Amino acid sequence: MSWERRDSFDTLGPKIYNRPMKKALITGITGQDGYFLSKFLLEKGYEVHGLVRRNSQMSYGNLQHLDKEMFNKIRIHWGDVTDHAIVSSLIKNEQFDEVYHLAAQSFVGVSFSNPHSTYDINIGGTLNLVNAVKEYSPKTRFYFAATSELYGATETKPQNETTPFYPRSPYGVSKLAGFWTTKNYRESYNLFMSNGILFNHESEMRGEEFVTKKIVRNAVKVVRKEIESFEIGNLDAKRDWGYAGDYVVGMWQMLQQDKPGDYVLAMGRNHGIREFIEAAFKHLGITIAWEGQGVDEVGKDATTKQVLVRINPKFFRPAEVDELIGDASKARTELGWEPKVDFAGLVKIMVDYELARN
Ligand code: NAP
Ligand code: G4F
Image (cartoon, rainbow, N blue to C red; front, side):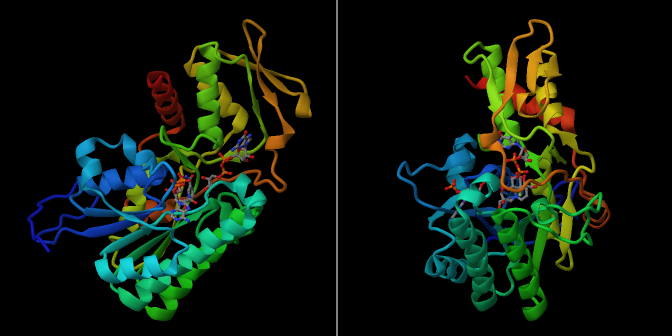
């Protein structure tokens, strides 16, 4: 192991002297958060390893957007989190300082149509990881990607670490099992295992089926006259949206504490789907006017009266999470977590990226 002096990591963490270069594993490294977390850890001088499941294209997902030098530093291990043998040998052989377990079937909508694979990956995969840490590398610090979907239909507002859970989808239920598995291993075996209860966080790297990316991509296509309009599901839902680049900092901070714990990361403000649509189009110079009721509601260009947004019930979910709004006071106080990008900033980043893309 190499020893190097690093006088100051950055302004977020404590100054660390004469510490060895840390070694971290990120599962789900090809996803949105994997992109930001690997960049963040590499910039801190970590040795970053990623577990990547094979696909027919041998594609590295969002990692392809890292600059080449960074990308080449990442040590890729091919494997699926549901493969107990792969996970165990990786954890045993590498003795990571930190494991960030981000891999998941993360799309709520798909969890209704594919509940089995959602459970296999999100519950079975998590059990493989925590059990391997317990058996083969108990000094490893472990982060589990829990979610505000745990709160689901709760009536408490805003939601914090003491709010009762009420998941509303197979995804939410699977993550609840992951949350409790992580907490139970922590308490039973005295392991450093923390849950990050993260509210929605988005970015230019967001998967295309999630509502923010879908809106931004289609709004840009409308402006470019590639399409006339696009379809959306439930307009009434509200989410507490932040920027993924800010949220991965909180994940890392959770693993730098003296003790493990569970932390909410959220902006503390929520916005409706209509508001996101309005904001995206506003950034493109179009004002949206809403007309009609229920499934007949449409979003029109207020100037030209052209219909730009329609509702298609095929995007409705069997059970919906109507409103989420988080209270991240604990993370702000104990971790010193301070997100920098607000709602307007997030929309701007996403729209500008899409405009520059094609
Ligand atoms: P994402 O973009 O959907 O990424 C999911 C990652 O998991 C991808 O790298 C995916 O690989 C990988 N994966 C899926 N199944 C796997 C398997 N069986 N074996 C190995 N890898 C597998 O999700 P994200 O937005 O970055 O979120 C990261 C984590 O945080 C997820 O656990 C998510 O549930 C949770 N979370 C997200 C949010 C949010 O708002 N973004 C909020 C709360 C919690 P492929 O590239 O091969 O598909
Ligand atoms: O963007 P979404 O698909 O995200 P959702 O369901 O909130 O889940 C995301 O955030 C969770 C944290 O709370 C994560 F744990 C999870 O992994 C994921 O990252 O949908 C947001 C809202 C929903 O209420 C949905 O019904 O937007 C509504 N919506 C309306 N029309 C739509 C659409 N969602 C999608 N994906 N597509 C639509 O056309």
